[in-house]
Image (cartoon, rainbow, N blue to C red; front, side, top):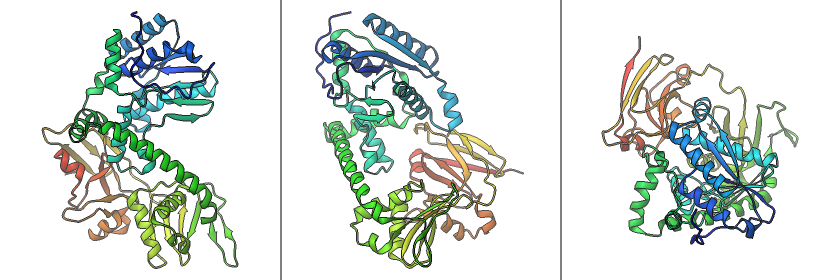
Length: 458
């Protein structure tokens, strides 16, 4: 092995301490190999005890086998301890209805966190770079994230028994690859990183290059947004911890004073005094309303949050369904959130998933759907889902100005109340792109040139 030259990219070592048993997650790609080489040349100086961690995800066949052999050989050459963990990503993705990427990530971190919890290691270092940070922030922005989402990848994540560290979070991918070329260190290329069927890869290979034409420093700017958002969110979490105890009212008010709470583990409720909420700045109002809903395990999106704030300005008596188990109601004094285990009183039909372009036969709905896309559209990595509509769903009607709630759409269609619960909709990439009996105008569908052909089954 050639003598290593001092790496030119920043390496965050502030979280290391002498005697730390550090696991290095190494996939075989350039970033993780560079992290391994950079730490291996400084382990004496930093006083680290290094272990190389490699996850074989059970996908990509012989390529994945070669990745594992490459990492093990490199580890042996350096005289370090090597741990390999084999998982079945496809099985997990199918069982949990996750994408392959989501399942792989959760399996990796489950193993890392297990090693930390069992005190086999003090910390695990992953090779996320500044470019990964920029892609993550942009991905979250496109999906409509709040500030906690824009915080992106955290440099330090505490977990039971230890921490996950990201020492390369200020380093550019180009700097890393240039150093590896300089020292003659090969690495493995994962061809799935070039597959533009995945949204993140399209952001990396298509969107960010276009944005860099407007600002060559766009990746660094997005990384700075993450730092700002992380600090902003930390401030707000501390502020909420201070003010929420005096704002959130558990249970429901009872005559004569006091409050009553349900003893059922499936039921819960919390309220906020409307006048006190109105007196707060809009930024605080949104935080408080979201925190109240999260108090009963009901995360809110932007539209739901604005709807609830509008309820506070209206008359008492209004009710809104947020999810299948959670509703909000406006009383004369409070905005209340109620979680009830028995809100759905009829059987829910099964969900059907398939990849677009393709077709599905959904006997429970009496439908066969054939979905096609424009010839130049990239197939999505997430499956389409034909299901009964859920409380909180919204869809954009053709020629309408804004998405409308399912209740409003079904009322417009004059659908009987006993038929509404299992009215079919098609969800794809986070949007309702089709529903029975109405023309929709979906941003995702238009971009892909999506066409749905429907056949009624006998």
